[in-house]
Length: 226
Image 1 (cartoon, rainbow, N blue to C red):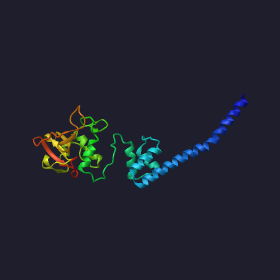
Image 2 (tube, helix red, strand yellow):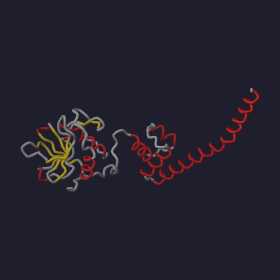
Image 3 (cartoon, one colour):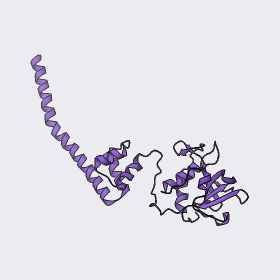
Image 4 (cartoon, rainbow, N blue to C red):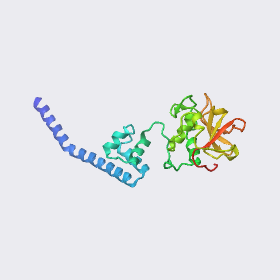
């Protein structure tokens, strides 16, 4: 019996030795293919291709630390890290983002609409948990690479003034009740905002009128009405 067991163990060891080179070769081939895809994507400057290649290389795992992964792959470019962030950032908004300094009011409107349905939370700035009116407007502009202050009283002093609601363009900020509330004008009498507790970010008829409007501010070049 001892001899038989010994012979079986020997056969198992032999099988392991025979199959290991093939397994290692397959793993090397997968790694090489993934590396080639990543190199092609990063070399082309196509962030979408990079993201797809990276996802394939990770086997669909997107929970990896961005900086560590970028350094480990030898990807030090802004585009590479940006693509990694697009895969891992909680609450990230999908879709293309204009280059810094090129955003228009049309881009503001498109970005704002992506947060429809997020609940109002007083003091909130995180779309994953909820935002208040100024947290929402700050987040929209930040997504476009435009920094504005956190609270309405400071936001209402940013950009350039617009004389009247009749002259407002999509993407302009509408400040009402002496700085008590702020929304984003969409054009055609519509606005989007985080209204009050119990409600969600939504499109509505702009209720701001000259009687309660405190300020209209244009942060980026005007957008076209949609």
